[in-house]
Length: 122
Image (tube, rainbow, N blue to C red; front, side):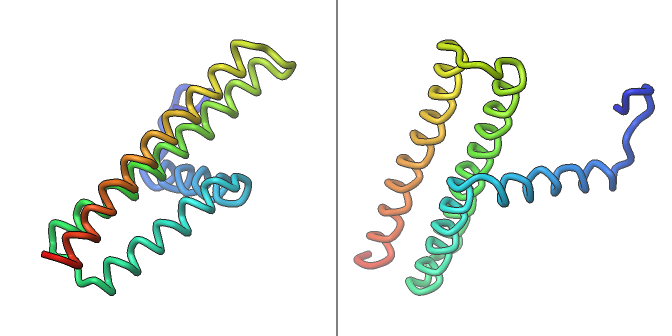
């Protein structure tokens, strides 16, 4: 909802979502790295001829990691807004969010490696 209580149009909400994605893409190095790795995963999947299940899993993993980084960036921005000066709890919050993305990334990498081994040897 807008500050005046009216609803944002459906199309406008998509525009806002893309604005957020483009902001993170422009300003967050880790998002760019993850996007490059996502492209690499798609190229590898193409080269190895992944089956439908492999593609589904690959795209779910890419979506989870990128969405995790978007959430992380949003939470970091909010923490910076409410606590512009250094604060131990604010730092801990940001570290925990970064840890969540790291866990998602590691698990996604391991699953993708299993898919690659499956495509190469089975």
